[in-house]
Length: 432
Ligand SMILES: *Cc1c(COP(=O)(O)O)cnc(C)c1O
Image (cartoon, rainbow, N blue to C red):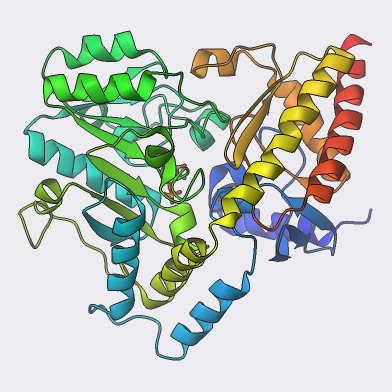
């Protein structure tokens, strides 16, 4: 039997890496088959280890907002590389990146750089607890804030995909202060906050780790008001939405300002960068300015901050990026509406900015229970068909699809034609 290079690599990987992958959703567990091993990527395209070419809608799960191997990013990293890969001492690039982030993201007055979204949210939680002197915090069912223990309660993304929203190994102690509400359920949040015991509400201002679920009108404003009434900090986890919806993130788009913001993904331009920041008075509690400990050997790493400052720098100079992304986004809005109308398929398309999701259900979809009620099996069949047609989507029904500045209207047309074929096949199989 002939095996592909990807198959050989996956076999080898499984011998030495749990499940053969270094992050669970990559394993294709929810869609069947086996992961492609990627050899290289450029613009909106990627090539697997067997030389197959795909149009990519994963974008490294969010970071590649301006496309793979973008010259501006490559050039910045190349230049930094020549001068050494890590110093463990402050550098000019960290100042450039921090200044840029504070200039672009409306609520940021100060920011601390770290290495991942997970680190950013863990640190923001510690800070929120220290600032308020309260231990409990609130998150939303199906929301994902990285893999810190306290957040792995009814978590989205890989945890939802694997069906382990509550991970073994998380102690009762670290989970007992996590309160959970359904996304878009403002009344439930208000009831929790009334106790005056909640340090912070952690929210993805557009949910993106249970598929893309935008906030209902008034939800974010309501959270802001409820937090203000009860002395609770509002934390926007913009690891996914930061720089993606608009340069200033969801907070700029909706005009609702959080007390703290966490960032990651796009701000690293594909290198490991995370950040948390917010009001000066809160951030000045972070060590060594204040007593809340937070640190990192590689935080502010020269290669990461080179890519990290090149990314927002390029975006600041190219505001037309968002006009292009919006134009691309309107195509599937119209395309899926037409497909649904023409064939009567029970599908729901959500899109806001350059993130979207196709759900295999009638909708309306507004929270984790309504997401979970959609068909994961039909998604899997659709995913596999699209992959065969050369379109690489996130291998899970609970992940968003990302457009990048490198996609073209012609590629989105081809994507929609393939999607119509695959939806027709999937629904013919269901009714057969
Ligand atoms: C991806 C993501 C994280 C975790 O970031 P990592 O860099 O994977 O640790 C946290 N929050 C949100 C909203 C995310 O989308």
